[in-house]
Image: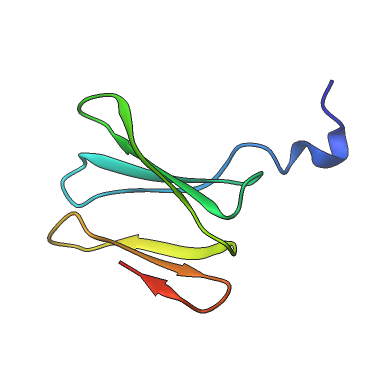
Length: 78
């Protein structure tokens, strides 16, 4: 049984589709240092990105499938 106090920590915290809607990136509340990138057209996990520190923000490029990621150690990844 899930503790009600911790229930808010479960599930997807944020999600974003790529510019062409082919990919979706997901961040789970329970694993703040991990991002999952799914290929929507093929219905499969494309990548699981694991960082040393929690992911603070991420955003897709508006014209191509490039993802920018910022972690709590103030590092920017592409």
